[in-house]
Length: 328
Image 1 (spheres, rainbow, N blue to C red):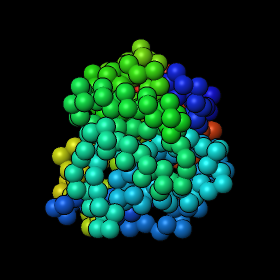
Image 2 (cartoon, one colour; image 1 turned 90 degrees about the vertical axis):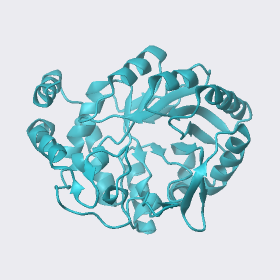
Image 3 (cartoon, rainbow, N blue to C red; image 1 turned 135 degrees about the vertical axis):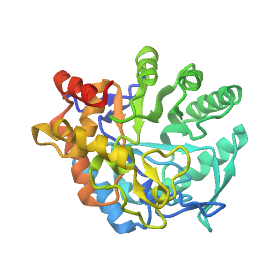
């Protein structure tokens, strides 16, 4: 498999696998106490995991200012250190948070806030430019988004940003950003259990990279989550918000989802893959523009995710088998 991807029309090259840095932000919460992180983390292990990923050929890291209320950006910046120039860093803006209390307090879709947020992200990441700056408000008003797109073009002119994208699951919204010259991608949910056919078509038509969030279905596609197994209190999957499918309040993984994962096991673990590696292989077979960004919290997880690169995409026959099993 070709292990590199180009971000849209920009010429910016990334590894075909990116690493999502939500989990390494540690615990944070909504105003009502709803957990928004993945539980406790060890920052030193996170730093080792990022550096191990770099050694294994991963050159794309996706974070957001709000992950851990700024903590994920700080950890990533420290982990990259002198190797910053070797990687492509993506972050996101639009949410407002309190770093002291690690609390998400609201959202701000103004152009003024975009500039303030960018300055703050540059500082936390300890860098003077962001490779891919992404709007993190998935359902922002399209007219306001057009203003933010123009602001991103200004950031590009100033050398603060190389390219930009919108993190949204709505193809019509993604198309608004795609009208900008330096729009390179759309970040959207996609995995073998939750296909995104319209978004993959849009990325093909508009020459955008398809950055796939939740490529392992919030951990369901690693096979480590069983139904009825509760998660730690600070884990978002323990009290899942409405958009988070596959988990039940305080009860762990949804049995129906677990049974679908079990049904796919043989085909996804073919050719010596782990289940998670098979899920990533499905995305690469799904679209030549796909750049999945699985999360990680340990060196072992980093090694397992990066190991998928050597095994490449599923075959056409295996893809057909997946569709047959899922009744698609």
